[in-house]
Amino acid sequence: MTPRKKTILWIIAIIVLAIIGYAVYYFASIYNGLQGLQKSAENSPFKSVTPVEVKVPDPPKWEGTEPVNILLMGVDARGIKEGEVPRSDSMMVASLDPVKKRINVFSILRDTYTDIPEHGQDRINTAITHGPNTAMKAVGDLLGIPIQYYVYTDFQGFIKLVDAVGGVDFYVEKDMYYPSNADNHEYDIDLKKGQQHLDGTTALQYVRFRHDATSDFTRTERQRAFLKAVAQKMQSTTSIMKLPNILEQVSPYIDTNLSVNDMWKLATVGYQSQMAGSEQIPPMKLLKEEKVGGASVLTVSSESKLKQYIQDIMNKPETVPVSSEGKTGTPTNTNTNTNSTTSGETGENGSTGSSN
Figure 1 (spheres, rainbow, N blue to C red):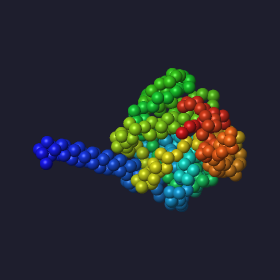
Figure 2: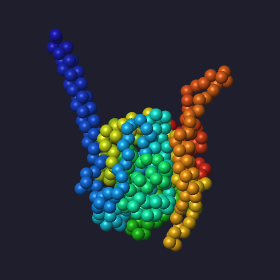
Figure 3: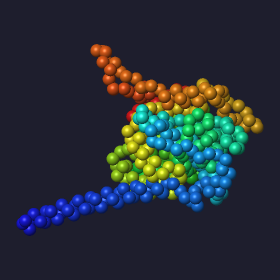
Figure 4: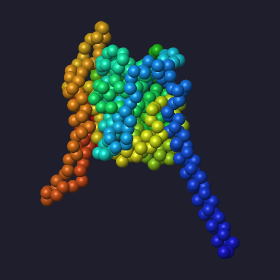
């Protein structure tokens, strides 16, 4: 072999080794980042409430073939003493069906008055103060579905996530302004209508704003629409390559009961799935406004109808299009093109349309 050929082979070998080395580092970084999301007992934000939820059963195991439901909770930790758990500022359930390859998102109005296991009745957003198992059980009982996992974060975790993916291009549907005197204006909301690039701070302003005629109703719609935009950004090639850095940025602010193995399985399911739709819970047709102890709360007019409503959405059959020649095509999701809207726009009855 000539010296020139040997040199070329050495160069190729070095390049291959460098690629393998980077791949090992990349996947090791992802693994370590994912592992860091599940906090140990001493680092858990719920370490002080663990003893009070011993009567609440552990969430059911997910086998990887049936729908999996994940409770997403964002909290406002401002003014909270060390060891205290704040109420949920926002609550969503993401339901992934690995068989039908569909994802449904349910936004739960935080003032919904319901049973909190072992703690009587209260607003749903108080459930997390008794620990994640209590929150999952309360939400699961309300919706009539098992909640297997939770993901918990605060304002800073949300800001870090949006900044880590490079921000999101998004349409703000109207001017939004609300000064926050209690926080020395650290969390003032001041956005202008129009298409713009939202970083973590401005994105937090958008999803927090509820100072309009329909308050929390339109806020949950905005949250679902923005969540979809972030998910789309996360699927981009650029963000996938930045995944180790993204995980490093958000890990200190997130807690979850998802294992790394579960995350890998769910990532595969999510990547292969279509967004079927997003809904407000309770829906307007089942929602009642009442006074409890002099305070305004939201109640469900019929719990059985609410549970059936959820099942109808999750089990909605796929349609098989028929051509003019009478031939059937590939099944399509019935929700894909109904109530479709662009980011920042909303449909009727608290439902935000969606696409793939």
